[in-house]
Image (cartoon, rainbow, N blue to C red; front, side, top):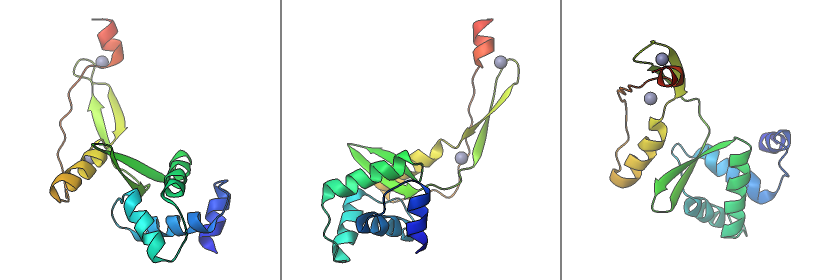
Length: 137
Ligand SMILES: [Zn+2]
Ligand SMILES: [Zn+2]
């Protein structure tokens, strides 16, 4: 089984619960909550408790398989890690450029959770001064 091999490759002990959780995550387009995963596991007839789901999410996150999004108010969503586009930061003084992972990924999740809106595109203007310029000012 493919998922089983994948878990092994990531040095994660294969259990029925973990295989199912990984499959549920792979089947979800959007980031999902632990409660959702728990419900899905139960509807699959799996005997698993909530703390096991939480622990599995921690393991998957620590192995870099999933992303965890803080939605505020103690709520978190999880999603299989996706390739994220980059934004370029340019120093206003020396014009040095630095690439960063899109910081909007987290915000997208928060907006979706609060309003139901799915962001299709965004325009980000970031201005700042690099560390070197700050030092030599
Ligand atoms: Zn600079
Ligand atoms: Zn972006």
